[in-house]
Image 1 (cartoon, one colour):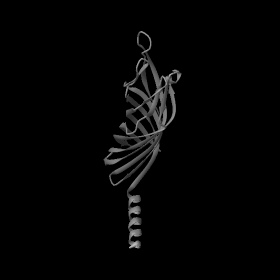
Image 2 (cartoon, rainbow, N blue to C red):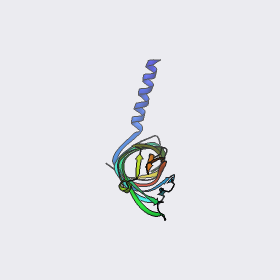
Image 3 (cartoon, rainbow, N blue to C red):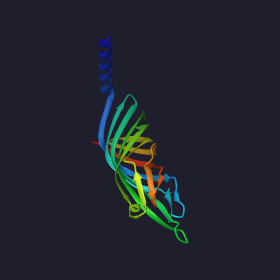
Image 4 (tube, rainbow, N blue to C red):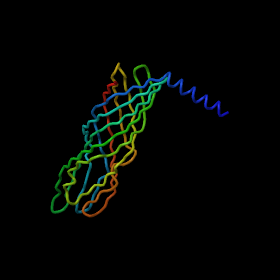
Length: 208
């Protein structure tokens, strides 16, 4: 029984290797990011709202593509930037005073898409892990607002692509399964901070 299992696994690996194609390459592109978060209100102090506008970001890095029997797996390692805007309303005094503060996040993304091939076209879905490297936020200049972002988040991607000679073109949608921030301290009071992002990504890959 053990010999049969070993022979079966070896036969499967040999046939998979014989029918598979592995390609490596570089990838780059742009993204349109949208952020949404629950408003944070401290009565008679501040109201903080995330502006859910389209924000342009960029990404670039490495990709691999394994194709076999009409199926493909495409892992990537990307350095990306995304940003958003936050409206801070000062409720102290006689009138509300609004300010727009910008934020920019630099991160490492690890998407892995898997799916079916239809000639040169393909459709896939898969997980994406993200590690936040740097945060450039104008909210840091505010003495009474302190954000606490999670270092790592987890999400998903779904998309379609086409391979033409040495090029790989992809259009993908990305959503978050975990929240970006854990909490925010406003005027000495801690508030729950449930912020999530979604992206539309357009990428071009070049195979070696």
